[in-house]
Amino acid sequence: MSRTPSPVRDALGVAVAWLLLSDACYAVMRVTTRMTAEVAPLPWAQIAAFRFLVGALVPLGAALLRGTSLRVNDTRNAWLRSLFGTGGGLALFYALGTHALPVGDATTLYSTAPLWVALLAAPILGESVGRTVWIAVAMGFVGVATLLHQGFSSVGPTGLIVLAGACSYAIAILRVRRMSANESSEAIGLHMSLTAGVVLLILALPDLRPIPREAWPPLILSALSGGLGQAVFARAYAHGAASRLAAFSYAGVLFTYLLEVALFGRVPAAHQFIGAGLIVAAGVMVSVAASRRSNRVA
Image 1 (cartoon, rainbow, N blue to C red):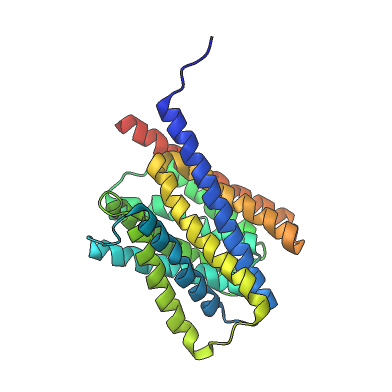
Image 2: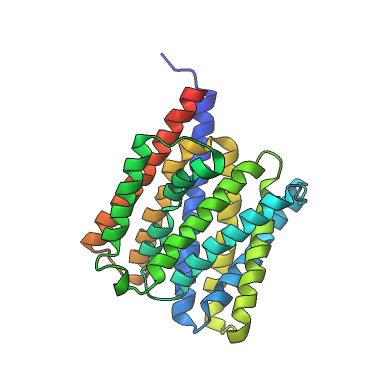
């Protein structure tokens, strides 16, 4: 006897498929950013500015094809989202454009953003935080300490910078919650990309260098995959509730480690496996708790 398909289940399946595609795009962006830094002596801020300014063509093109308005109505939250998102992008690309952290480790530390969201949701949005979330947050930061192995001194300030960037990105996510009902994803994405691109270009101006020929392929791939990932990410959350999708976003950590092994031959050590596993498990616990809370409210 065949079972009747569930519209809710089908929508969730579509959303997960979009989200996994987004994770794959972001993984390509991170690895090609590091690849650019290894083949050409370009400043990290110049690499990041190129990614955001060229990546802005993706939401712009999507809006033109779909006939979507690029006008932002909630300018206050748009600027807050873009500026805090720029802070997150600045920290991540600083880590990717240097060699203080492996790409997978930088990605994992940046993936603590949902833990910061859980901590900041109470003071910013007035949402309650349960015991499970506090346990998950504690587990996540044990994972951070394990991932960095010998402590922050072994990698300089980069680990702290990436964690601060994850916190900044978490605040940007909270701003998006206030905007998503009245703004198009293309308008939000274009505003963010242009803001980050201009800020990073200004930072890069003192050391701006000509782009050598060998750096163009990974630079363009990083920009387009990042822009596509941002657009697909918005499409995923248009099909499914955020609380149900958050756990799947950690597939990007796995994709990034796999690409790093395939392209650079860097196999993670035991402490990296354990630390990343604790952080991912903590993030999944937070997302499951949020999903159950939203179901009870519904």
